[in-house]
Amino acid sequence: MTRRLISSLLLSLLAGLAIDHARVAAKSGDAVSPPILQRFLTIDDPTPFNYRALRHLDAQNDRFDSTAWMDVWTEADQTGGFRFQIVGEGGSEYIRTRVFRATLETEKKMWASGAPDRAAVTLDNYVFEDGGAQPDGLARLDVKPRRKDVLLVDGSIFLRPEDGDLVRMEAKLSKSPSFWTRHVQIVRWYQRFVGVRMPVALESVANVMVAGRSTFRMSYEYETVNSQRVGSPQPRALTARASQP
Image 1 (spheres, rainbow, N blue to C red):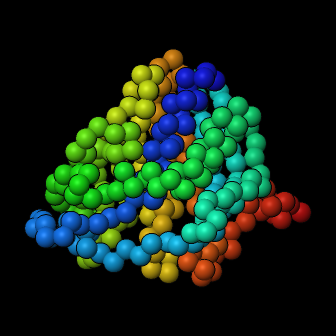
Image 2: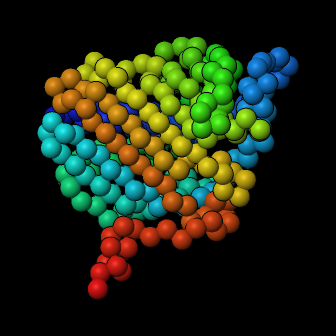
């Protein structure tokens, strides 16, 4: 796997992570339409002041026949910031070191600096267009960035029509992270735990010159959100051993 591929993958993952921390807010006094947009911008959206989650990371590049995976405990709070502990890993050491670990270290720095605020889904950052009702019952809003920024996206968000809550985002980066990466597609899914909306899965597909199609997936299993227990996740290595006769 080439250095260019690793760099492009890393940048696309960081953009996805920035979306994780995006805050949704309306500017006071704005008159917005359609009604689903008003619901989305004004929905009660409490901040997660702490959480603990087990993340499963997978990456694959078909052309270079390279794959890797990692299980990581992640936690964050207002005093200690973002922390992580790797509890299982396998596959390409280069991907695990240069992509997975590098991404986690950068997320730690981003959490401390507040940089993801640039990616907030707000009227300051985006123009919204009504995309209508979808076959799965969700309402679609198309989002167009007001400026070119690697942390902003161009695509659609999918909302529950009854309250405007965010369920899924499907988009491409509004700005390519590098010359070598022509297209980066991101799909992210969300779910609420104890009233707090949290990301539960991310898939990022990048088309990289020379290297071809590269896929990254990350899923989140939460143990606690805002100091309340919401699950009992187990690393896949432990689960596999427990299932053996």
